[in-house]
Length: 61
Image 1 (cartoon, rainbow, N blue to C red):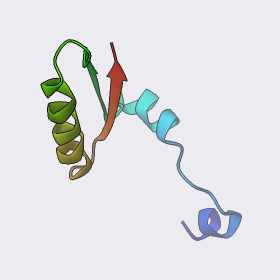
Image 2: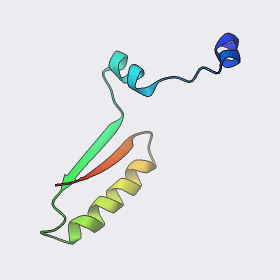
Image 3: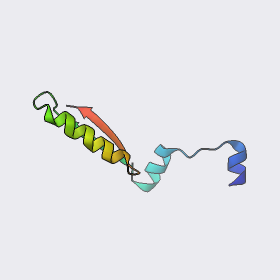
Image 4: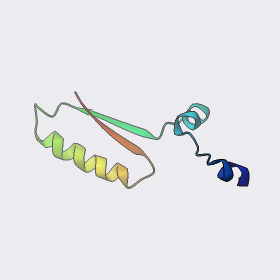
């Protein structure tokens, strides 16, 4: 680990996800134009996801 620190190595999240078969990403696709409540729900869900080790991604549908 000392050699990695000296070289300024930082782990690559994409490479790690290829090895582990886990991306750590939660994607949300909602049609917010048909129901404005979806916007509130998706924002609340994104805030809750941020509290965990997972990464959130809200996608317009």
